[in-house]
Image 1: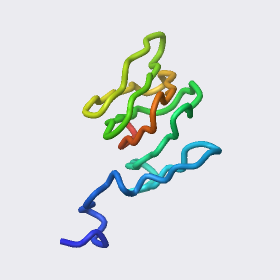
Image 2: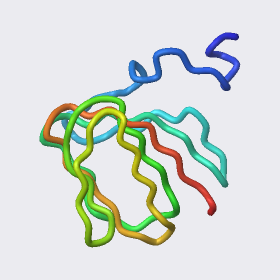
Image 3: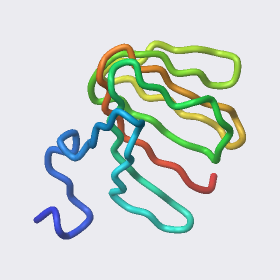
Image 4: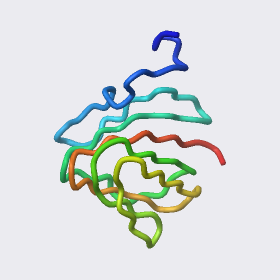
Length: 106
């Protein structure tokens, strides 16, 4: 199966794009009801706290902190964070971070 089939992605982590001016999400699928993406965040970078739809974050590389509501969690490879719809979330990268994200209607 090839990557062009849009259902199988080899070396997903390598698809992350890093930029000094903030994250540049790379969509694996982008439909009106569901989005899946890979995101690279430079060391010291952040995603400001914001509300959004239900989402899942699975960390592939790096370390940092993620805030969900009033709680802050350590992030590292292998950690998965699930955020309910409407909850505020944000991230601060201590090192270069790569994560998979999915969001949509819950």
